[in-house]
Length: 163
Image (cartoon, rainbow, N blue to C red):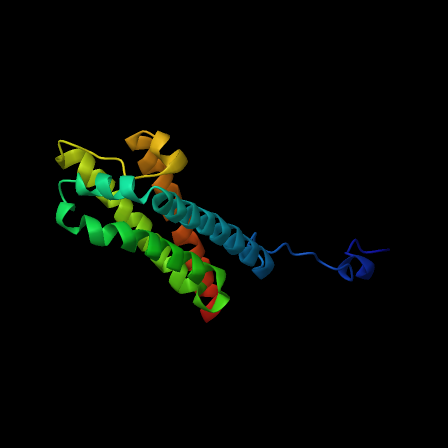
């Protein structure tokens, strides 16, 4: 009489255990690279757009009810900061600082827009190029997208550096 048991050949079969879906470091690095490229393009485009029509940019800033007295300082410092952040994003050693700065600057721009929309009687558009064709709500959504991707890349880069 044979007993019905599992054969030893069945037990010897390798068991394939599927790992939970997670990004490999290669994928994370690629995602970080893509996000950094998007942010670099945004900041370089924005800075060059402001600098190419510097007089208009300065006049628009001076019409803003909350920053009129600082318009001259802001009109050259914003493009300079945008270029500096882009440079930080290009250099791998300073990339995390650049990502944090991107998150902060985009959050600051968005908060400024929201304050202007809710508390100002006049909202000058100091954006340049394609961005000036966006409505204010579209501009807030546009900025929010870049805030989210900057935050995501900051978290991934931080984990990558300190893992």
